[in-house]
Image (tube, rainbow, N blue to C red; front, side, top):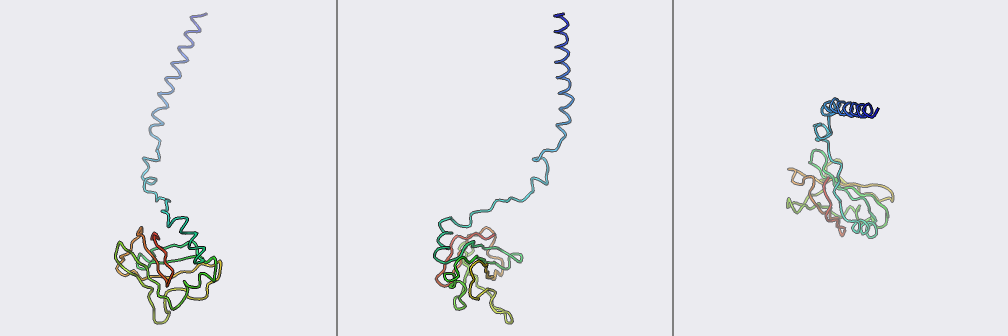
Length: 167
């Protein structure tokens, strides 16, 4: 009886080992995420910090604007600066028609301006700001000197936003 128990345990162990060898090749043929080229080429969802939290609070309290963004559009020919107005009275300076906005890129050593078209006028919103709405302006990037990832400054009259990352 002891011999039969030992023999059955040995057969059980042999069966388990044999089944693990039979299953191993199937596991080896399955695709892993690292081996899949489509997964390796997937775009990153990482977004660099546009500016510090302290800077965001400053723009909100002093200038009445929030969510400042600079984005390359139209294949990089235009750089779009957009912002959300949280306090219309404070944000009035950004929409002043008399102020000439410029975008400065120290890496490319350029100052971009908002172009003015004959029939359309300047490519910016200059109406009286309303709290809770987003506004924008477009800078001409002829020659595509300003590139995605560059750190730029936007100056509109007394307003100055430094360290914005071009998306």
